[in-house]
Amino acid sequence: MNVDDKKVEDFAEAFLSVQEISEDLTAKLSDAPNADNAQSMQREAQDKMAEKVEESGLSVEEYNDIAIGMRRDPKLADRVKTAINEAQ
Image (cartoon, rainbow, N blue to C red; front, side, top):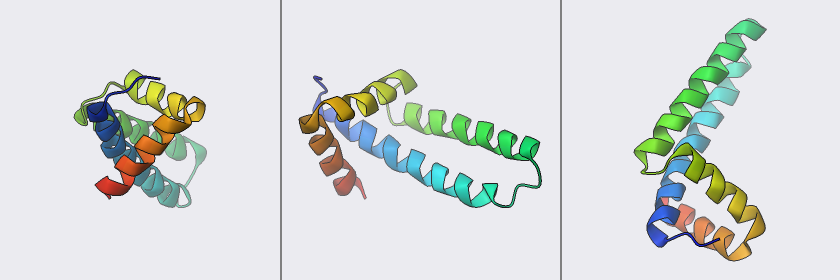
């Protein structure tokens, strides 16, 4: 998969934001009073994740394509991991 360096950096930024939202959601779900509330929390988190991805300069589709591409392309995965480590 051919992904330019800027998109790799954008993905890394988005990934870190998405990971933070996901960790926050996991912590909050344990306190959810019922399934409806938990589902609402999950929808809200998904909306926030999509917003952060788009703020990074990628569409959600591009973000997902890169995530899938990492599983198929070890070189891309290495580039992304390096970018994530540098962004932290």
